[in-house]
Length: 474
Image 1 (cartoon, rainbow, N blue to C red):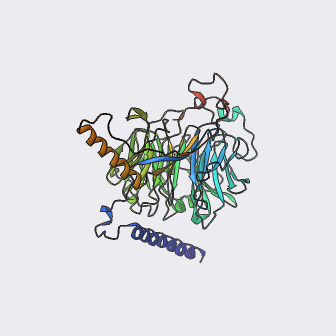
Image 2 (image 1 turned 135 degrees about the horizontal axis):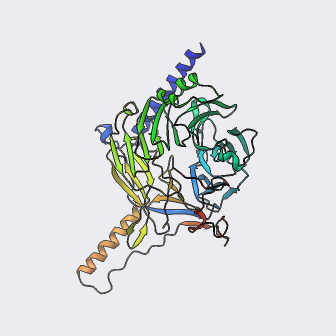
């Protein structure tokens, strides 16, 4: 009886998600549109600028960030040394930083929120210290809800013999009130937010790191993972939780239970389902390719398209991740930072790129003279035309340039062109630009966090995931 009720509830949830996606598509679509859904193109602003920034918020490089659904202007971010920060980008001076050891001891690998109707007040974070924590966004009170190393104190010997477990990826499973986690030896764990560990099984080859996990938004029983074994895989949670228990994970033969295995030539740093229907799947691979499957039912076949993009990263950068824009009802808009710089009006800048994954075309490039560094971490806002980016120890918020200012710029350019064509000396008067971003600089003159001489490249040059010998990323 309980099984039938659960199946009925799951079916209702999927139908509700489908109805919501259809309603959002109709609400956001141009009313004059009468063509096919696949031909509808979400409007992407062409020109963006930095409107708010906080400099040196973290002691080390930013590794993850997310928007709080209950407070739309609040960004939660984590860094390489275990700091978790809360920053309101509208009230730019409103910030709180929970220092190393208050939440996590080492590199924070994920920040995740449950849907607002389930839990609007807490952010869930994971880290290399093996902890899964829940922190109240108002009071910053933290509690542990999961620990892959219960009752164990870390020592270097534990890393040498492989006994210490680290969490490298998380995603929310709202239908189960749980989180899906991936660790450093290929295991996937389902952690109930109230009762702790539910199930464990092998998601990647033994002794390889799970780099990314994703839960299908329309059907939380369908999940994906990607890792250092050069594969991304699809799983049915119900099938796996019946096959394994919390006492241990089976060997590599369990990988045969995956619904689909997508081979890649190099490490797969990220995997993502489209945010409304969950029909599409996109992987980010360190061979400088984004691979797109238009239907998850076709994942055993080659991808529908490959998008060439510069995101092969060094060990001293956070890995790049292609992130869907949840506002796009057509589920075609993907945001990702770019590794290689290009010349923009005489400046070498690293843009944040916005792609249409259905065509592979670049829709927009986010560049600003205020951001001359690489932005590996980028997340679109769930309801506003805003993109948050983490670069080095800083956070930047991007918004489109207003239409009236774009018209003024176009008018000034036309006037200058006419003046040059007429041979006027000195050119034409340009429209004055009074724009300045809201910026908070927290640099107090201290050096970046590591000891002197620890590396050549500043505060990101040493690999301090754990206070031990240096480890290879892949």
